[in-house]
Amino acid sequence: MIKIAKHLLLGTVVIAGVLTVANAQAGDAAAGKAKSANCTGCHGMNGKSNSPTNPNLAGQKEAYLVKALKAYRDGKRKDPMMSSMAAGLSDADIADLAAFYSSVK
Image (cartoon, rainbow, N blue to C red; front, side, top):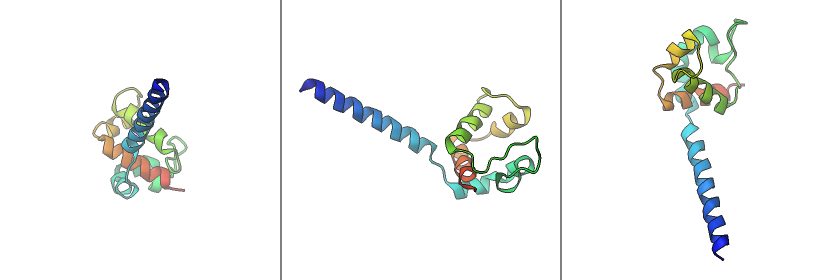
């Protein structure tokens, strides 16, 4: 009986952790669209770049965009332009931008 209780408790803790991570990354796409003005010069309107040297952001996975932007902001991923653009972004800004770009088809 104690083993079952331990497994149930562990399962509950794991599920709570997953939900916390998911909620931490959940952004507001409308707010992200409003915050994307600085991105359009390189990544185009709605994240569809006209330049072969700049990636399209439209339709990318939300979790990937969050991870990449945080890595630029925190210096784990290096690019002079992206690092400076991401430096002032909060976690909420990043979540909003990721929600917006991932929602664009």
